[in-house]
Image (cartoon, rainbow, N blue to C red; front, side, top):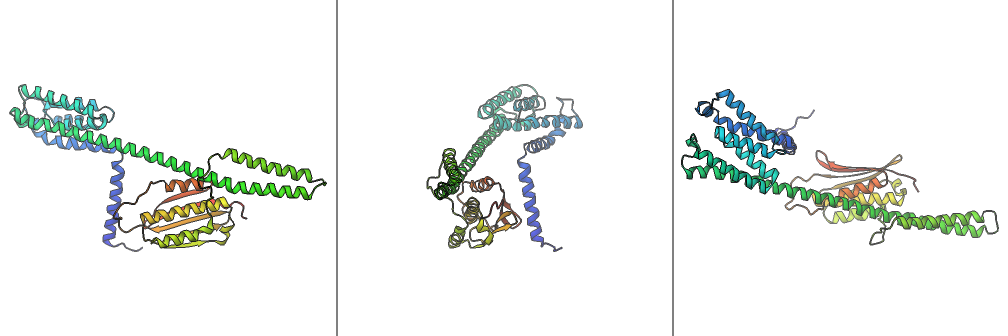
Length: 387
């Protein structure tokens, strides 16, 4: 087994840690646990002072238990933000603890919006002001009104403000996700329209030829026992063509069918001129595929070359179209870029969806994604009846 260089091992470990952190950061429960632990860690700094204070009967262990119970309320902050807020006010009045209030006000702004955050800040400042005017307010929390306001008000406003800003970001991300989903559905619909157009063009052409040939045979068999059979076959072909026209009501705007395998060398040459050389291999037997399957191959290869030019410019792309028994295998690979592009590529993010829809429309399977060093697209479909 080859030993990896230390630098490469460190990079791989860093990348793995980054992926794990990213995965954890997307788990709401993990974030809530981290928030609760952080709040408890900060509040635990006050445990010695709470144990020595004369305005409560807590010793060290009891103070730690009380603070842990208060911090654990943050586990419910998404569903019951107001409960966490009420517990924070309880801690403010009982233990003069401001830390939990910061987390509670942030949670109000984050999960209940601007109005709730504003009301929370007003209630927090008013409650704290009442406690300030009662005997027993600790000097380190502000012994004059100005020092009190400079401590309490900024804490509440900043925490709630950050929460409201995060809430706005959540709304923006939700809208972007909804837009991406809409664009994906639109891409699927557009691909289905193109597939319908291709079915109409290819199958309709064959039905037309069948009808014409049947009429020719009917004329040749005039007066014979098979004349009526050929006429009936011709009428059946025309009827099938009419039904095809009625079923497929949406057509492509250009009216031209998707090219087949014969157009792939031109795609490869165009990609090479754009700076992304292509190694293209097509099994001879693949040219016997039906027009619909050839259109699916062309669609996949075209989109892969476009994506490679966007995300890995200048890298060599390998395209292999192979017939393996009764299955057709399309494999497209390109190395992952060694450095990020100077400007992000313009992409709607729906090309892969269109490829997958095209392949699945003819009963195939589709996968796409990065490996250790390359990005690979693999599509498998049945060869069907070879011509």
